[in-house]
Length: 213
Image (tube, rainbow, N blue to C red):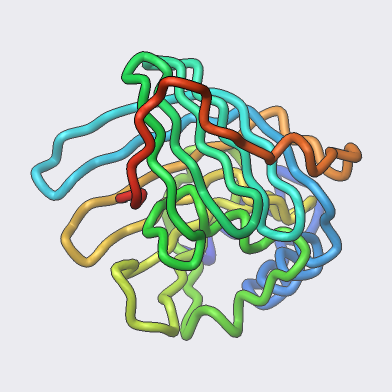
């Protein structure tokens, strides 16, 4: 079945479908050279009880390890990392949660670690191209198993086989919960400034320690 899907993709695109190794190498090469990344995103979270929550907005990523997720729905929220500290701000709650990036368990973080230093073979023990229909048309679906023992049990990426950009990420956890991030309107190396990732809690908001998943 997988061979049939690969053949159909090759015929539809007019170009030979790249091998799994070529895709992994292409992703590493593309993200290792990347200085910044921005896109619209849709995030879907599903907990271990199968309860779902969806959000959407715009994100900015920049080396080294900087991120800014501006949520527009279901309400205004902001997740920011300057590379060392991460902050999650909900204006309606007048509350900010903060924590060191190295101690933060959050599904928005893995993608920012790719920018400027991608090393998939160093982070994952195995790769498998899945014979399933991708959510993003034309993408190749690759399942990866983490090398280190963490809460993350697997990562499934939908990858554009021409640009090697990740169009969708699905993070599966040991407790059965999962998180999905789908990207559109991607722009790369637009010259983002570091000041975009600075955050100072507004006056009058409650500041709490720790950012959960």
